[in-house]
Image 1 (cartoon, rainbow, N blue to C red):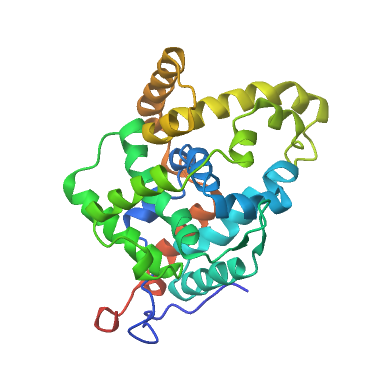
Image 2: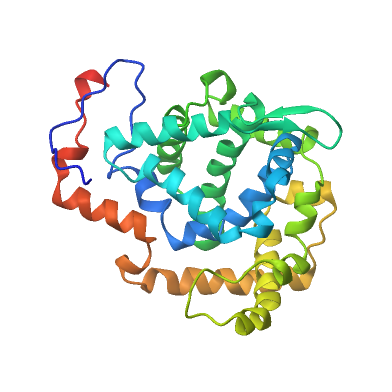
Length: 302
């Protein structure tokens, strides 16, 4: 049922996380088509962590149902940002609780858990790096003031997702130190990483769940689309990570990406505003315009 209450949101206690509202930088960026260009490399960074690789390998949903996986991820994470405050908080709690159910034993016989502190934080931590480099690749580098605001919202989103403060670097300087430590000391070339960098994966995955889309057409276009996906993923990865895992990035790849990035910088700003966002973001933005009081937070109690 749609929420019709439009009263100002007041947190239940001082420990209640503060949602990111319509005025936040996150609302303006997370649901854009441009941000989606950074998600493949973020996922690769995540599954290079042994704990995350073990969890993802268990059901291999990235292979057998990648479309369902993408849908489920957006349905879980989207409302943490694009929703009225009460629902945003509930969505953050639900997302964390879902990870509590993820557990098992990896191929080396070591137990893993979806709420492993380092791994759970790492999934979230990759987001700030992705946002910063998205602007460098496909826009213009953010100003120092914007960067400060982005990091503030990064910490705010972490609280929404239930990531303990002790697991989140509290300054940008500490963030980059931790980010590079994880790449240097913890990430590895897992089977999932190998799969995601192989065109063979795209020959195996099912076609998109569109009744009108013919199977034989998908089988023709899947390999070249996979090739482009892989090239984009590799080009947008941190250089340190590519070097550590020995992922080839040729001069041809670099030239190809420069051309693609130029096209995005040139033509993305020409898109009408409503074409820049995914559907769930557009729905929330419309609701915020029609019911601004529902998103207003009581500053005295935050």
